[in-house]
Image (cartoon, rainbow, N blue to C red; front, side):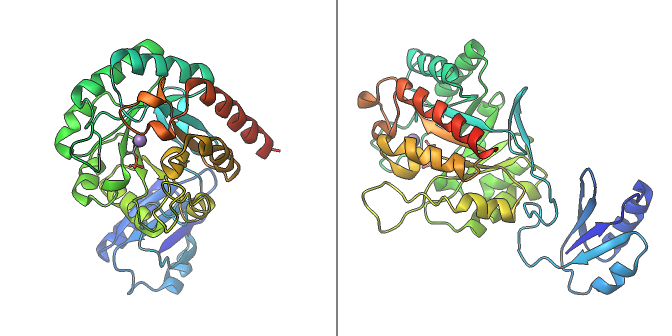
Length: 335
Ligand code: PEP
Ligand code: MN
């Protein structure tokens, strides 16, 4: 249930109202916007009478929310959330970021050269996998801690904030200086990992699982937010369908749908969604047109010899062209 307060309500009135809700066994989530303050009620609200609430002097309206996700719900928080990744770099609430870099960090020269070229093309966040979730245990598993060290070195040299994937909460100590922590598709429902990330203050890039619904994605975001970390960015990266020409099927309707349901920013990853480099450019443009708050693209200096996901990686030159076109689409849809 959400209660929209009347304008001009004081902090002490809000506090006593929250105490009253607490006495009814409910937790509260307060969202203060420019114009409105909204209180989200978390818990069993079945015994709360909405008419009674609306009769209170400070409440403008009270509405039941049927969706099980509360903190991520736009009804609790009508304004878009803007998440600061680093100083001057944000995603959501009108801020847009291009995230680019290799699937995996392979060596110092590779990550540094890719970092420099994606920065030149307009990317504002550098990606690179260090702990890699590979289908086969015989495939390259990532450089692990060393990969994060190399990303941090590229961050120092270029000034780009970094995003890299976590697979196990016991690795959190290595992520201290990582700006944005990615939860990959395969871990979207690793609830113990999500709970641990909820206890940090780090921005989290939460990817949609291989065969998960948008509701399940939002419930996973809810796991992180319920722990106190509200810095969650949702990522559509394609889902598994009967189609075989593409690696996954990019669900672009997820962008406006998620934005309708939630205030959290939405990023699209056309690389994993298509699996083919030549499809990344058109799908990146489509994602920008659909209103994505960010786009994440795999870029490799030598895709043919990449240790992971070479087939879907753009060269720095191709990325430059795609980035320019994405920014042009962003400008065009502002009209
Ligand atoms: C990745 O971003 O490198 C990755 C493994 O993505 P996903 O979890 O979407 O497959
Ligand atoms: Mn990849």
